[in-house]
Length: 248
Length: 248
DNA sequence: ACTAATTTTTGATTTCGATCAAGGTCGTTC
DNA sequence: GAACGACCTTGATCGAAATCAAAAATTAGT
Image 1 (cartoon, rainbow over the protein chains, first blue to last red):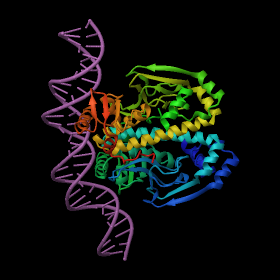
Image 2 (spheres, each protein chain N blue to C red):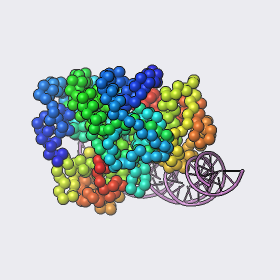
Image 3 (tube, rainbow over the protein chains, first blue to last red):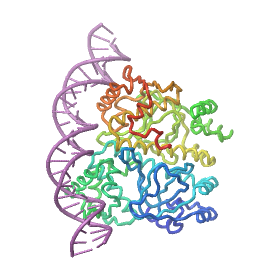
Image 4 (spheres, chains in turn yellow, brown, blue, red):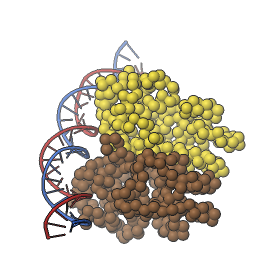
């Protein structure tokens, strides 16, 4: 259901950050044209930093294409990724003018940006944009909490399996490549980025990926191209109950 | 600033879950009386479960007094706490009718509840309640992300110091007991609950608390009563930069 | 095509926190 | 006030992941 809806919605109002999530049926013409007028695009290369934590940030944005990460770094250099931005995800907090995290492109990335002040004005006048933002934020909070369980209690192998499952699942919904259980995708993250996401070292990530390959849970071609022959089998390795997590 | 404001706001509208956060100056009389009419109270004893993950949940609520925890459990029993509910915190997701987490009282707990349906109706008619909820949710998301850094990258000692710092800071603002740097409080959590929060075992929690005591970072009277003689010293142990985290 | 740089894999060793196992303290009940 | 149970501390040992250290595979540059 959600994948085709998303497709249609994206086609019909490609850049409205709210409509990206396929709920903007309620967007009215003048609101949409307001958004149209204030929007602009930015593109980034893999590895490029979109914004550093603490920098002034006078815009909010929605990912159009590509993947970015949110991360936090301690003074001594330890870093932890705290979020993954996929197409349609929103970044930037209305009402706060400094970035709280480092935002980095891990693939080629296009974002649809809106200057903060006019966007906030529009939000004031258009309650359902705020409502939609609330829903999106609650989803992010659920995702963050699921990630807390992963970081606090899962083994290295479970962590890797969980990350692969998340990417595979998203890829399956996005590209409809989920022919009878087999899923194929390219890892959008380096081993180091995966390590920062999972709270591991890159060596451990590499070893566990090798182990999953050895055990036939995944197949690897090169370093990035992954085939999951049996998604259920992968899910069994995640430690999650068979169901889709918090959204029971 | 915030502590006295909170006091005043709480006095003058004790149970509105929004006003608890000291921003409900915009609450109008009829909205307040709507809330008054639909509110009811529930009380729990320490250790009692407010609701189990997956259970039907037809209310939303705000903590009036006491402390509760949000936690997730894997089938094999591993559990991870994903949130701490302090007075004025809000629980329950508008638009979702099943709990996503276990909610447990760790002290005597009083909550101010509102049936979900009428509360959602009121939200529809009163945009600034939604706005306030959005702000609160964004704060929670920031807190969750700070916790992800802790879970993924901090040492056991840093984790304990961070938790003590959070409780101490909150206690200082709440009870104004922050006389020249020295802070005194009672731990509202058992060692096991702390372990579940920090992604550790209770033995490690106990050992690290002993170590901080041995090193003079904290003083302990009995098992629960803590004195922090020098808050800066405690902060140095957390691994955070001296400043207040994401709210830079 | 060849070199250089980056990323990944694999191996050897160490370390931090988990696990296993007693004891100890405190509060409650009979 | 003895006995029970809940909670906490401490010790000994183990193990999973980190760290240290090369080598292999890829990618990029000239």
